[in-house]
Length: 336
Image (cartoon, rainbow, N blue to C red):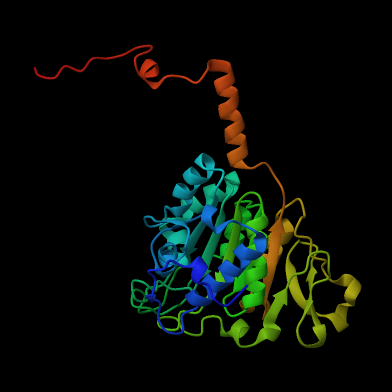
């Protein structure tokens, strides 16, 4: 894609409110590249956001857009996706917006397999409101709202999405433009609910949150469908799956390549993807990236359209006025 993105951005946009060094600009560029690669007509795209730094996206994209209310973007996007199947509907959200007040809306959009794409920018902090702990902040995190350290055990966004049985789940990091574009493009091509967590640094309120994979690329595990999971210098490390179903990092020399877990994003059950989502830097000193799960199952939009068509065929188009005055009715007097 050409570096000139003027055709993809609103003409009136001159500057953005993002802090210098913020990854949002990188993310915007990667998303636009993925959109172009996937062949989606940007004039048929719709971005819906909630509240937070990430929620500013619709202001700058040369697409349809809606800056909605806190946590409700998946619910609004669901209505738009089922009523306008001609549009490609995307949700841009953050860890606070999606996993706190919006958690309920998120999991139901995913379990229904609504045809929309959800991009969650995870910086482990509330940035817009100046640095409070978020649902993904680590245990003991000291912030303005937790001066003695957070007592809340954090959500793992991928585990939440896989537990809700999202049909597509992926992860990328803001500084890996190529990997980010590949995951977003794969999500764009997917039919059904696609959830992508993007690790992002907030250099003002939570600087260095993901340095262990931003600076040290050897700690990144890139998942390749159908291939044994290996990573690190000279691919000396790998991932195995134990008898209890959990996954862990090993030295390949200690177990042999035949013992390594072969990645299968299309595995029917979500258990394999869930096991990989539990591999973290805290537990194993490394973090997986790429597409964790990609399966096909009935799409909510199509099921609803078929049900509406069947109802019309059986009962006709219907008439709202007739419906309101049918059956038992009550008259509420005005005065006295």
